[in-house]
Amino acid sequence: MQPNQVEIDAALAASLLYYDPESTIYDEVTARQIQQREEEASLVSDEKLAREWQDMEGYPQISLSDDEKYAKRLQEEELNRSISLHCGSSSHQQSHVGGSIDTSSYSFQSPPPSGDIDPDNMTYEELNELGQSIGTVNKGLSKSRIDQIPTHKFGATSWFRKKVSSSVETECSICLIVFKKGDTISTLPCAHIYHKECISHWLEENKNCCVCKAEVGLMI
Image 1 (tube, rainbow, N blue to C red):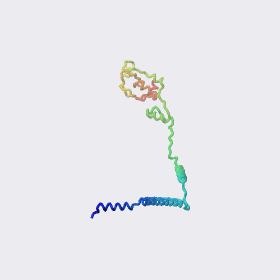
Image 2 (image 1 turned 90 degrees about the vertical axis):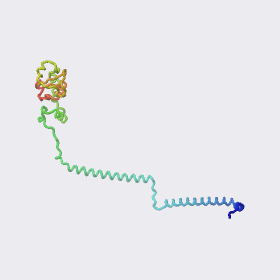
Image 3 (image 1 turned 60 degrees about the horizontal axis):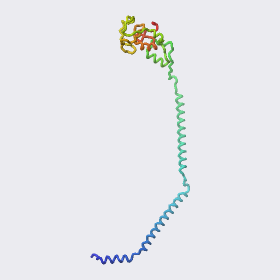
């Protein structure tokens, strides 16, 4: 059987009749006091525990600076130990190597006697190698001797024409370029012909014809 509205109103009126606001306020105040006492007790307990740890016999009081000093000391000791080991190993290796050197295994090449060198029979490459090893070797002709070599224009009619008419050379043996009409040609006493500029540079370093190896200086 469902309660009617009259019964519901009567029950609500009875609850309002016995409601005590002061009792509710008292309960809230009591709860706050209990919470505050618990917090104070917890704080006191933490402080007491901290003091007990500090008062423990033999407890090390290590600061950050002490840690840094200790780490630095360890690092220095390790470095000194490494240096000592390295120096000892190097000394051992040097003494070992020094005692095992056999000087007979070394060969020292001395330059050949000057009487054994014949520049006239050496190639251009051999002369360059010799010059790099013992210095510059000047075996060419002087400029005044080179200027005495007769020259002419290639293709021109002259008394040189008859001298070189039997020559079949159509190119310079030094630069390997074909002679053209009007080129300035130098004719050596051996009848070989070259561009004047090419043979002049050649004779500054070598006094022989680069084709037949005849010594030009003896024929001028």
